[in-house]
Image (cartoon, rainbow, N blue to C red; front, side, top):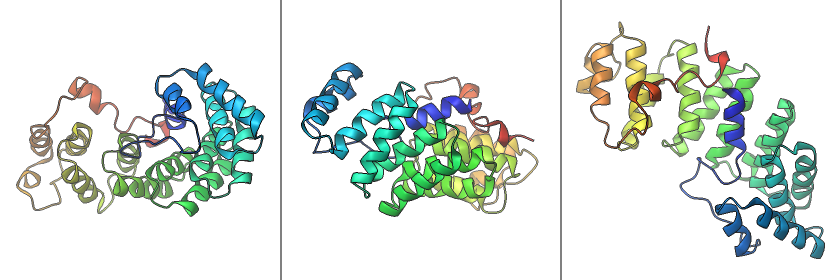
Amino acid sequence: MLAQVLKRAARVWADRGKPRRETSPAVPEEVGAGVASGDEKDAEAVFVSLLRQNPESPEALHGLGRLQGMRGELAPAGRNLAEAVRLKPDFAEAWIDLGNVHLMSEKPEEAESAYRRALAVDETSALAWCNLGICQQRRSQLKQASESFRRALDLNPRFGLALRHWVGIQTKLDWPDGAAELLEHWADTAPDDAEAQAAVGFMYLNRPLKKCPSKRPCTRLRGSEAGASRFSRLRQPLGLPLWGLLAHFGRTDPRNHA
């Protein structure tokens, strides 16, 4: 599962940490169209052409490095992304992708450094916080990872990848004080998000003998009843069988389990 999570975090056109993703204005429109349609060859050809014209284009180096990283060509991807941030040190998105390549190359310390460089440029990047959390989680730094995922979810409560990791860590830590209130706050901020609502239900079904901590009506019920109450609030199709969705929580990394 961890390998799948890392691949998902490294996908160049699936930034779950932002409501939408924009192609850099310095990159031609045909590149954005090629990436959006999944046509890697067309996009790569444009980036290579741009680099022939200007070998020091940070945007072209970044775009080519992203595509190479997606294909698992980690060495050339790392070189191109490193050159992109050397030429443009405030290129937050390139720092994130460089961190992803380091993480997939089993270099967690270098990955963490890259994610922190991205956050130094843009501390509102939910994706950078999430990927930093994945890196810390991989190094068994669960409390630090929990805080990084919290920062991502404060920025975007609908960030499913960060939510699944955060819930898994809280389960491992036996739901420390304040965790349940945080989760309910995020779920209330995104009342139409099925995954957020299911996460709250999972929390209470997973700790059925404890009373819910907040003062809202459903959380004065015993755990299993509160979980059922939360599931009844789902306002969109789950897209997966309910228990299949619940299986996501707490199972994104073996380190989440005793």
